[in-house]
Image: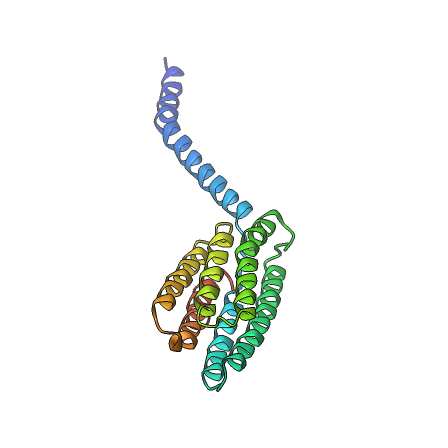
Length: 209
């Protein structure tokens, strides 16, 4: 009888502890699987500091464009800003991916690019068509809407704050359609400038630069 008591006590302890231990392990496993899946499908190299720099140059471009006497001169300023912003964004993305050891040719990166590019290309084609037909008033809202759509689509494969920024662009694009064309430079500054600075700071703080 003396040998039976310790065995029963051990069984009782195991029976009491087993469900808790299994549950904890299951929760840990689920959390690990969830994080692994999110990392495997999310493109996290969206640049925060680079986005902030793009915003600063956009605000500067808006100030310069607003002082031009001719619409074509203002559009030339914004064309230069678009090229500059593209270079800043690509360089910052490459730098962040290098620091984070994340390949720009990975599956999430390809999904991000393939989702981001079509709305952007459509926007470029529409703007060029408007330019050819001397229709200037619609360029600013179309740029905001198409860029916003590109960010939303690409953001589906990135961190959550990215598609939120895209929807903010879309909202400002709708507002720009309602306002007179004289507000175009202001709306471009608010969207491509202020939004990039705000969301760039959020991305830099929460997602490593």
